Length: 286
Ligand SMILES: Nc1ncnc2c1ncn2[C@@H]1O[C@H](COP(=O)(O)OP(=O)(O)OP(=O)(O)O)[C@@H](O)[C@H]1O
Image (cartoon, rainbow, N blue to C red):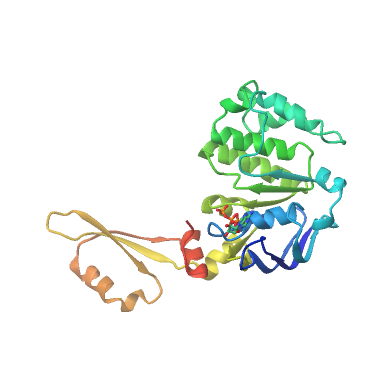
């Protein structure tokens, strides 16, 4: 479905390549999340996969095409939702989708159905310029889905979405996955990555540091933590301290707290993907 081998991409005028020898394979019907700090090359990789950036070395096979040489049929089969997609600002949301639908030779999905799916039915008659950031993002997803693509590429699809819209988007993407669509998305939203993605890839300085299921990543790199709430001072004000569960029996501070008789509550915490990422990349996502 998507296979990159030794993919290297260097922007004109840059000293270092932005993508450096990246190898990646994404199967049909998979939701793949690309994570990484700002500037690590996520959008560049999406742009290579869509055939926009052609001057790469290595091979990039997308739906059977070499991405740099993809013909018009390729664009009928991929859907692209990048941040700030271009809309006709004076057209309504519905008219924008009707317009873009005409660009497809095959029978495209009904725009009104897409608006309903993404929770935009009541905003159908609003002009694009009147839409909020989250609404525009969802309209961008509608636009990307118009041609019922085999491969959907979304750049930060959860940005600007409230929890309800995020949940709706999750349902839409899971429905498409069940129908065999392959989905590649970038995100800084760790919760969404864990909930949505079958596998996640961590991109750091243009290299894929790790690819695995969110669960396996958490197990391998996630440190389990014990959160201890205690009344440190005589006035009973609550303090919180966290201890790594590994070797906690030998932790002098923890022993001291146990003996103090001031512990109010203790419970374990799962590691967050931010912590996991920090330990993989040696730096924190911005
Ligand atoms: N047109 C360009 N010309 C030169 N350098 C570029 C160009 N576009 C991006 N870059 C550089 O390539 C690197 C990767 O950028 P890219 O946008 O792919 O990162 P990203 O991981 O998507 O970041 P973010 O999470 O902020 O969207 C950055 O150092 C950026 O400055």
